[in-house]
Image 1 (cartoon, rainbow, N blue to C red):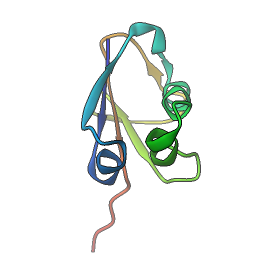
Image 2: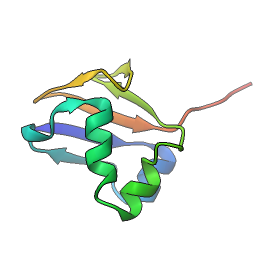
Image 3: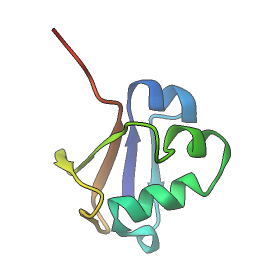
Length: 83
């Protein structure tokens, strides 16, 4: 299983802090994001390509081409600014 976690405003939009995806959803970060976005509704809004969203795989910042495999944790979160 792939553990998918949503943080901050993304959690509010999709209405959950985490979910489990079956191993067949593995691929790259971009592929998993596209599969989730294809659900439509809240997922399409939260994970739209034009919305700035950062990702981490196993608590390491990830790029769209980073692999996601069975047993991984994939996190989606908005960028944070500070001063």
